[in-house]
Image 1: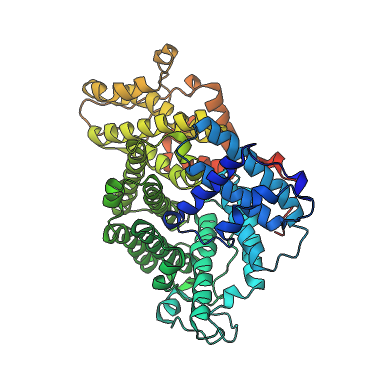
Image 2: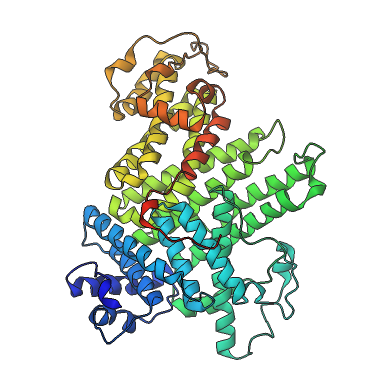
Length: 543
């Protein structure tokens, strides 16, 4: 059996190096691998032995570990990392076809579902990642993990019950191994299942797989989890903050899906609901402030930990945008104070991306983060776009335009290394191009020196300097004595930009006049587009 699986590189030494790299970074990544390093490192020498049959689940985890270890290697160029990463990913997808035929109600298959959902997410195959997440949830149910802290599996879980529940559980032995076993599974539930479920619900426009009231799992005892993977301080902060914001997402879900008392007759949140939602928005900012996430990102020297801090910032920005924009709260929602929170969060997201490159991170160092970049960073771009068009001050508009242009430069650089990001590059390029056309006349001439450097970064063709049509105007012109309504010329867009708007079912004029609403349509299309590697997998999951 093993002979049909191709090793990713003819040099076993390189395989061992990649595998070793993953385990060397285990304290930074906070991984809980189900296979020991010693056994994992023997696989290259036995995989082609006709007398030894290696379990397909082990082979999947082995190739996944090689992929992650290879991406962490400082000795490979971005082009080499791309080649190896795609080869290893495609290998695991072929192995998954055999895995789906096995009995999956076991711990090792749970890890396979965890790992491959993450692998697909990192490769921007969000649909496949979601399918495998659903598989992981089903396996976890079969194993009793969703009733881990209940002697009698009676469905009743709310955030208030979680905070008051004792971590003890009589279903498991009260010895050290029993406590560790329970806490490992609490980590599985909170840091993988619940976190991923809210990511798919609130950020990737998919249905949730874990309904409220169908589970009873206490919060993990972090003193135990520290001993499990010997994680460092920065990784501990990441897990703690990630857990806190997952709890905020849980309270948000309870508010919008399970609180009819907070809704008016029209289905909108009433005043009490608005107050509760604003409290959640402020709680997000409080968590970031209490744990000093921004400051730690600026101080940390580890590229991996810097990536984790950036992910937290991007995720919270996407949460704020989702809380404010994707639910029909009222015709006058959101209020100005909340748009300020949203705007500040978007600034944090772009500055976090800039910080990664200030640490001399190249595109190859970000490959493991591309799923997070597309999922969580995309909303920040739309927020800045809307803010620029609706801005009442030239300074704010120029600052936002600067950030948006710098973000485009970084994303374009990444897209040059990985074609899977081309749609994100086109998205931000279209927004920036529309802004350029609109602001040519919308900004007073004295602002031109501030904005010109950022326009030049985009290398636009001289043909876009043609005289603009005057039949379309901004809905909210800049409030300046020297400013006038800025005309829009959608016919000057690139062909691929027009095609993007057409696929979204909107026009440049609609995007121009109602940017916050229309950009959500573009965002949803971007995050639900077909998987870039859909042709690589032929198996179907139980969804």
